[in-house]
Image 1 (tube, rainbow, N blue to C red):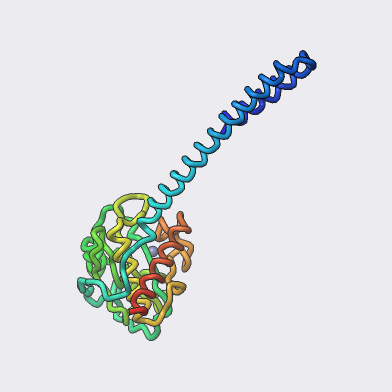
Image 2: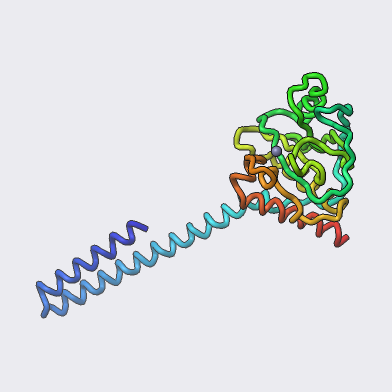
Length: 244
Ligand SMILES: [Zn+2]
């Protein structure tokens, strides 16, 4: 773009000089006009090339974004590895939940850790007493899903929404908190399945951030447009199942 601006400024200066020095020279001014015409054609050609590049870049960025937009899952029950925690005051209080009004998405904030490691950490809290923490589900790096607490029982994940939501923790490979494609796909399916199960929509799916303002799940807090795309994917998965 800066090249084009430079050319047109140069043309303007040269043609005004030309008209001052030789006002009566028709042949020369005609040649100048033709030259200016060629330059204009060059500028136009440059613009066309720029537009083509912009279109190609646009298509490319859509394609890159598209891998997260086109998630070919429905709301059917995913494979769930049920490994319920032992009932204990630190991670599975055994408190019954009466009504599920939402699904809360989390990230483990422990890069590279697996679903199994996180499940075992939660279960180990009954002995370590380090903190009170757990989650109904954990989605692993390869898309595997472990259930730690039944959906009709409270988990310790979402603070004041523990009593009326189902929580899903997601593993992530690095500090960015971005989920792998496998994790993402399983998360969409699991969330959609839970929505159908509890008669909810994608609008009832929230981030831990929406409860407490905590930076969780980090990638979806820092990239709110990706969060919207995720919810759209959940909605599409629900639609797909209801159409069948
Ligand atoms: Zn969280």
